[in-house]
Each structure stands twice: as C-alpha cells, then as structure tokens.
Amino acid sequence: MRFWLGAVFLLVVSVLAYRVSPVRIAYSMDYSLPYKWWLEVEPFRDPKAGDYVLIKPPVENEYTKGKLLVKKVVCSEGDYIRTEGLDFYCNGNYLGRARTADSKGRPVKPVELNQYIGRGYYFVMGEHERSYDSRYFGLVPRENVLKLEYPLSTFPDLDFIFARREK
Image (cartoon, rainbow, N blue to C red; front, top):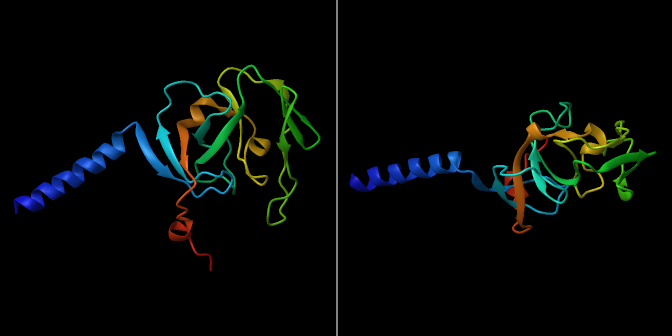
C-alpha cells in the first residue's frame, strides 16, 4: 500500500511540476523547421532576430485555427522590412519568396510591407519554402509570443507515432 501511495504521489508531483515549470522539453511535428525537439522557456527577454519562438498566430484561418506555431524571428524592432513583388527583404537582405498558392493549389495572399518594424513586433518565418508565416499573416505582436524555443535535436523523428491518419 505504501508503495502505491508513494507512486501516486510521485506521479502527481511530476505532472504538477511539468505544468507549472517555466522550462519544458517539447516535440514539434512542424515540417517548416528542421528541429523536432525543443527546450521551451517562458520569455525572460524580448525575442531578437535569430531566436525561435512559439507564437499564437495573429490571424485565425484554416491554416492557423487552434494551432501554435514555432517560427524563427528574422526581422525585429528597428529593422526595415519590405516586399518587392513576392520577395521579402529585411534591411536589404533577402529573406525568401512568398507563394500565391498552397500545396493543394488553393490561393494564398502574401502581405505587402514597406516599413520599419515598431517596438514589440516581429517578422517570423519557417525554414521550409512552404511555411505559413509572416509572409502571409504579417507582423507578430509581442503578446502573441508565448515561449522562447531552443533547438535540441532533429532526432529521433517520432512523427509516425503522433501523426493523424487521414481517411
């Protein structure tokens, strides 16, 4: 009996520690980034270019409904972001090209930007060319940045365990 009480106590403490801890190890099935395993930390500072962040997308649509996204901050406060056709530039450096259709051929509309980024806003991107990111939903406000993410590993890839099967 004491063993089971101890086991239940340890389980409850472990679950509570995980739920309230400011640091977690997380797994992502997002194909727009090469990393699968992340160290997830409560934001203790404002994100800067080069940081990975967990965000709540600033718009809700069929691509973002009910989802949180891990993206890389590529342009931040004080940087100049502009579009030239479908191409995106930060301080004159090429970031990538937007698409006009998703992988299923449905139209998507890239945003048009030509501005300095204000305090508390970020332009974020995935590393895959088909990533749904700031090229389509625009700048992300600071209040939508939920965590700072630090990549740990690309291995092991457990998507086959967690993947939902489509019928």
